[in-house]
Amino acid sequence: MTNAVMTGLSSSGQAVGMEDVPDPQVPERARRRTYTAKYKRDILTEYDSLNRQGRGALLRREKLYTSLVSSWRDQRDKGVLAALARPAGAPPASTSEKDAARLRKENLRLSGELDTARQVIAIQGKLSALLDQLSTNSSDKNLEK
Image (cartoon, rainbow, N blue to C red):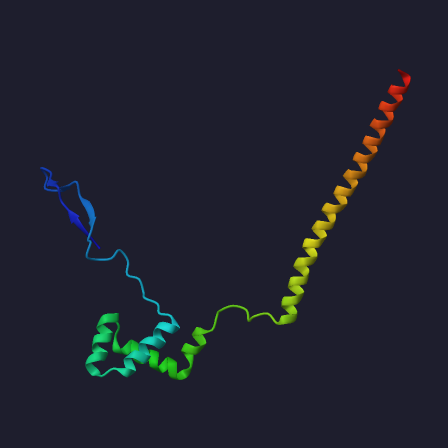
């Protein structure tokens, strides 16, 4: 919500310098509250253990309505809250699937190490041949002198 603030009127009586100033008492956009299954369970447990006055105090403190608590109680009785507490997504992988994934990952790592080792061996072979050639050339030059 915004309030219009007039800074003056023109000679024709129209507003000059109209500004939209947000009202600090009203939120820009209302947001729907969401509650976790644990929060609902905790509130229901506390609500059921209190007397009438305590229940009212709890509802005021948490800014809840009795109809919301009633619907949570119905959900709990139907088992919906237990279903909400379960993690979303695919079910956990079995141990054989975990082992296969671990072995695939290890296989990739070892393949990379093997490729690196092969490259090092190839470079060492070329270096050895180069050093052998250099030593042969230098010994030939020393004999010529």
